Image (cartoon, rainbow, N blue to C red; front, top):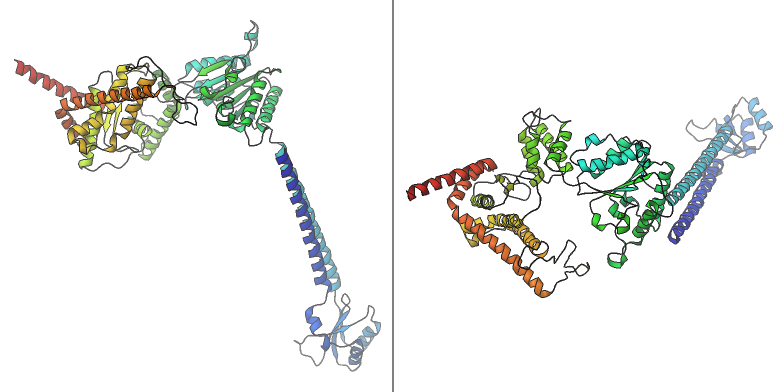
Amino acid sequence: MNRLNRLNYSGKERKAKGKLSFLSVITSWVLIQTLLISSPSLADEKNKEENLTYGQLLEKIDQDQVKSIELDQLNYLAKVQLKKQGEKDAPFLVPILADNPELISRARDMNVEFSMDDSTDNAMAARVLVNFLLLFILLFGLVMIIRRSAQVSGQAMSFGKSRARFQMEAKTGVTFDDVAGIEEAKEELQEVVTFLKQPEKFTAIGAKIPKGVLLVGPPGTGKTLLARAIAGEAGVPFFSISGSEFVEMFVGVGASRVRDLFQKAQENAPCLVFIDEIDAVGRQRGVGIGGGNDEREQTLNQLLTEMDGFETNNGIIVIAATNRPDVLDVALLRPGRFDRQVGVDYPDLKGRRHILEVHAKPKKVSTEVSLETIAKRTPGFTGADLANLLNEAAILTARRRKNAITMAEINDAIDRVIAGMEGTPLTDSKGKRLIAYHEVGHAIVGTFTDTHDPVEKVTLIPRGQAKGITWFTPDDEPGLETRGEIISKIACSMGGRAAEEVIFGYDEITIGATQDIQQATRLARLMVTRLGMSELGQLALEDENTSSNPWAGNLPEYSEEIASKIDGQIRTIIMNCYEQAKQIIMENRTLIDRLVDLLIEKETIDGDEFREIVTNYHQKIEKKLAQLSI
């Protein structure tokens, strides 16, 4: 508050100084224009010595030497033109009196051209006009200063107002029919809509309306889309706000906004309040260096009180979304505040197909496109990923000037979404052959390793940072992984480096296996420290929050001896898998050479063609062995 007061006082001082300077400028201008209008010119002062006197003028008139006289009664001057003067000569200026009957009568008697200057009226009109103009400018400036002061005061007082978007009947254009792939979550939230539309159906048997529903799931799985669908289906007042909009740099603003939000919601009850990314304000209290952010904690305390405090807010359902439920405060997650936690996970095969159907409706898709095939090729894709996939395919279709999306565009879009934009093809050189052996090494080791996923594609076309890519697609939906499956993944990751060493020698290995080694090390460490799949036994030595940073406060809780054993177990697992990969490469050297020649020629080998070549090769080997045994 002291800072706000200082800001207000400094603003008032600036406004007062601005007013004084503005008034001083106006006063100076009035004085200047008055002097300019009423004062004689410098040229007149310079020619003062050459002018006539009043008496000399009368004598000139009597002597018939005056051609014309023009009276300027504003400045009490007579502009006299003598007959001996030329037309371009300046007239003589003669001081006159207020009343000049003698001068006028003599001029008329001598037939002198006589006129009265109307500059008096013009000058007075100009002066009045200028004064009115200055008065208008002054009033306009004062009005602008007052409006700005009121605006600044309004902004200072509106810090504590909620910034939630309000819709009396939310017309989001989204219903539950537009949400696919998360049927369980839809069923949970359809009950919330029924609570709002037909509360007597539940209150008749004593059921109470839930106060809060927390949507938990990875990014892109449809949490915000579900909230929009609830708003579109319920037909009740709908407030939407992000968690980050509560917290400001000023202390107490977040708590004030929470109070204002629930006050508005109570006035429009029954209603829905949607808080997106609630982890921005609902983090655990008292954690981190220095105890955390006091302002965030005050905001969270106010939110806890409003949701379930001494005074209850009936008819308000709070729906919140987050992808980090582990960082939320325990008091926020308890029943009475968030009665339900709805998981919005990755869609399965059936869910992906339904999502593709929803996003394919507004697009022109060829009849040859199989959404079932696309769903099988995209395990682990979220709803946002699938929507982006079809959008990329539509962009490629328009770029290629086709009338409908085909499987060619779908396949290219999948490659682009997974690995990045296609780069320039490699030239036929030693580097291209080395990359070909590297990728074929991955494919061969994965094929001849038990429990590994089948090959989907092997390509030498660069995408993103990768010069070549080998894809594997699982036959079934990802589930509980066995130790054998993890070992096969590690061996397959080391297949590229193993092929380089076996084919070209240890001195010719490249940095292309950097990410492969990192992935293998991560999986091996996971097996040892968290999954209990090593000789150390069934021990969970680390978790997701374990860090080697001494400032983080989450250090490992094992001794140096155990740390040394962990390193030894990780090295043993990786080296055993590497030796297994080298053995597979050496046993299939002839097959690998044929595949590399074909890959360099075609640059891409599909999974079906790859498996056909491998199967035919081994059938020929078996026939030869059978003939030799006979």
